[in-house]
Every structure is written in structure tokens, then in C-alpha cells.
Length: 407
Ligand SMILES: Cc1cc2nc3c(=O)[nH]c(=O)nc-3n(C[C@H](O)[C@H](O)[C@H](O)COP(=O)(O)OP(=O)(O)OC[C@H]3O[C@@H](n4cnc5c(N)ncnc54)[C@H](O)[C@@H]3O)c2cc1C
Image 1: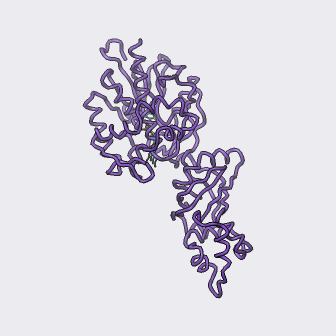
Image 2: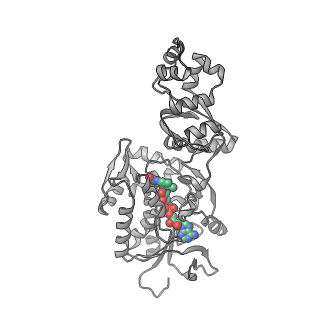
Image 3: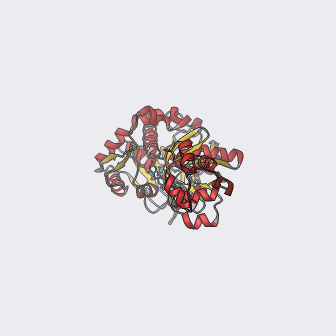
């Protein structure tokens, strides 16, 4: 700031969905400056658009809230103030119509983020918001002034309120590298370790499987772990497995691997088939047919599923129809690690939720608000991440406004 300014001067650091949502909330009542280390804003939002931009989810609101696990109580007021239908209206007002997909996921009709981001930035600019790119936040100096590294050297700004919306630590080349964690920890703010979320896992594949199957989807299967079971599909990667069904179980799998090094995930290759009928079908005489053609004929197993079977079953299991049926219904995959944070979809951990008050202000740093993925919550894919980033960005923006009005 400066006390001489007529309107309060607010710094928002991070131009992802959380930071821009905060800017939008504050623009009418404050002089808003958004800072980002990157040459252009919203890089991860644009990347999310490459896979269609799952903006939010249309399921029942209580179910929706439940997706945020133990964090839902703290996030609930923010999510209620900007619920999925409000997100759809907001997008529509920016010229982006949305539709509900078969699973309840909500996408822009154009299945991309760029038109929405362009319109959003234009509206913010018209509302007086100033964007400073290539500004890397380095913390505060001894006088509490914000310090940035820029191509023109160090720049300093004194703010009446600050919203930090610096993201998690996945895909650091898009700007969010988690370097804020050390800056806040230095100020006494407790940070839970940043960990991979919605991630793939390592499997020690044979060279044969990797060469034949890397990149291929395994469709219409059921995955089970720790009492949770779900139908869907996943993808074989060079290092292991990834894809939607794996991401849905990834928090439980990651926690178990951290506790016990390796875990066993069970895959039902034929979730529609009853085990006894399958064993009976596999017992049919196969004459001179190879096992591969027998499996294809009586069980419909071929391609990547057949290669997975060969990879994981020993000769005795392959020769015994009853054991083979059991194996097909509960194929064990040993996972040896979660994929590294840099390549995963989102980040668990971050600013411990007890560190913020109901307005998303850091208790230890009055006037400093936090929003988005840098807070310690996690959620599956399905539009929940962007929903909570937008909602907490708005909540932090409103919190900053209340703080400024109350001074
Ligand atoms: C491949 C992929 C696909 C995804 N698809 C979806 C999807 O379909 N639906 C969904 O809900 N979610 C999706 N997500 C997740 C979603 O994109 C993120 O959860 C969301 O962008 C986080 O928003 P944010 O504003 O908190 O942080 P970010 O979007 O990460 O923005 C943080 C900003 O802070 C800036 N920054 C960081 N450190 C500094 C610093 N020191 N100084 C200055 N600036 C800094 C960064 O450059 C960045 O612009 C996807 C993620 C990935 C990787």
C-alpha cells in the first residue's frame, strides 16, 4: 500500500484459478495487483483444458462435499457460497456454456480452457485488475514488504492485504513449484509435506510387457484396494499404471505405500462374469487351440488383458481353470511407489488448515490470506479440484475485503 492510496492496495500472488477468483471478488473495492512468476497467467488451468477442463461436478451436493474428505468441514462454507451450479453460471457469463457428461462431470462445450481464461482476464482487466508477470515472489523483507525477483531486478510492494494462491507442486515447469512452503514455514506457518495426489504408481513390469503395452488402456475392469472397489479403466505406462480408476484409489494406495513400502492392488479383468461360470467356461476342452485363443473364445480376454495375465500368473495357474478364473477375478499387481510429484495431477499437503481462520486468513500473519491447492486438502479428479480452487479463491478475496473494511 500506501496509506495515501484512496482504495486499499491488494496483492494477489498466483494467477491460477484461485488467484483470479480472489481478484474478481476484490476488484470493485480495492486496487488489485496479480503477480505471477510465469510470462503468462493460468498455465496449469490451460493444461487442465487439454484434457477437456472438467470444471465441476453435477452430483448431489452432500456427495460432492464428501469428496473433500476430512477437509470438507473447513471448505464447506466456501463451496456452498460458490457451488457447482454457480460455477456453471459464472462460466456462462464469460461466454463458456457447459454440459454434464454421463458421469456427472461438467465440461465446457468447447472442451478447452483458453476461451474461458481469455474472457476472464479481459473482464478482470476492464475491472481495473493489473497483472504483473515474470514476478517471482521471494517472501517479505524485515519491514513486511513483499519482495519479487523480476527480469528488471528486485521489486518491492507494500500491500494492505495479500492473497497467496501459489498452487501445489506438480508440473513445476508451469510455475507452481511449492517454493512458497519454505517461505511460509520461516514465518512459523505449519505446512504438511507436499505429496502426490491423483497419481500413477510404479510396477516392476517385464521388458516384454512394457514394450507391448505401454500407453494402452485396460478397459472395463474393477480395481480393489483396502475395502474400496470401483469399476473403470486405467492405462499401462512404461513405469507402472495411471488413469482415472487408479487416481480414484490413489490417496489410499499412496498412504499405504508410505506405511508399508509396497501394496497389492487387485484387478478384476472381467467384473461382469461370475467366478464359477468363468471357471466352467475355462474348463471346456480346448483341443488343439492355444491358451491365447481359448481365453479369447471362452472369456473374451485378449490384447493387453491377456498380456497382463501372462505377466502375473505362473504356469500352474495358467494350466488350472479354477485357479485361472480366480486370478482373472483378482489379478494381483504389486505397486512399489507413487509417481513423483512433478508429474502428477495434484498435490496433497500444504498449509495446515488450522493455520487459517474462517476467512482463509493466516492466524499468524494478519492480512495474509491463502487459497487454492496450496491449502492442505485433496480431492479426486472429477472437477473437485477446480471447484475448490475457485471457491476458496473467492472466500479468501471476501475475507480480505472484510479485513480491509474492519481496519
Ligand atoms: C494435467 C492436469 C490436468 C488437470 N485437469 C483438471 C480438471 O480437468 N479438473 C480439475 O478440477 N482440476 C484439474 N487439474 C488440477 C487443477 O488444474 C489445479 O488444481 C488448479 O489449477 C490449482 O489452482 P491454483 O490456483 O490453486 O494453483 P495453480 O493453477 O497452480 O496456480 C498457481 C500460480 O502461482 C504461480 N506461482 C507459484 N509460485 C510462485 C512464486 N513464488 N511467485 C509468483 N508466482 C508463483 C504459478 O506460476 C501459477 O500460475 C489438472 C491438473 C493437471 C496437472
